[in-house]
Amino acid sequence: QVQLVESGGGLVQAGGSLSLSCAASGSIFSINAMGWYRQAPGKQRELVATITGGRTTNYADSVKGRFTISRDNAKNTVYLQMNSLKPEDTAVYYCNADVTESIFRHEYNYWGQGTQVTVSS
Image 1: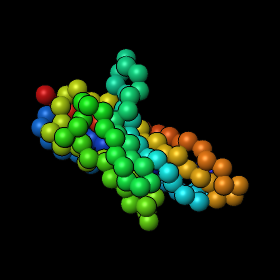
Image 2: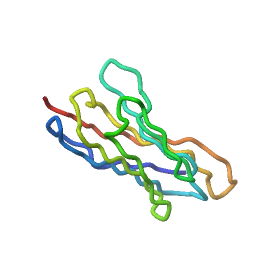
Image 3: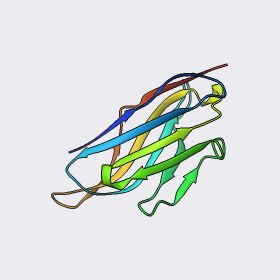
Image 4: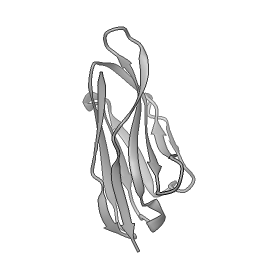
């Protein structure tokens, strides 16, 4: 079993910054793609940013130039640095990872429990 635990959410004023972290733990052989998604009230969950094992990144147009995704493979952790935050960035942010588990070497997709980010105007 694998767990993803996010941290770093909170309340910030527009124009401010927040940094999110997501640490994976459990029966991990390797972690492939990792990413951040968000869901605002009344809206569908949407992709924010992804990063492959080779550190190729992809961003939603709405966050390009403001958010930066990175990872530390030694710590099985993915980060999201969010700058120039806007009220429309308010959402629950979820970590996601494609993990090859260590026992049978099967790949599964996992989600974290989510962390609230609120940007006040």
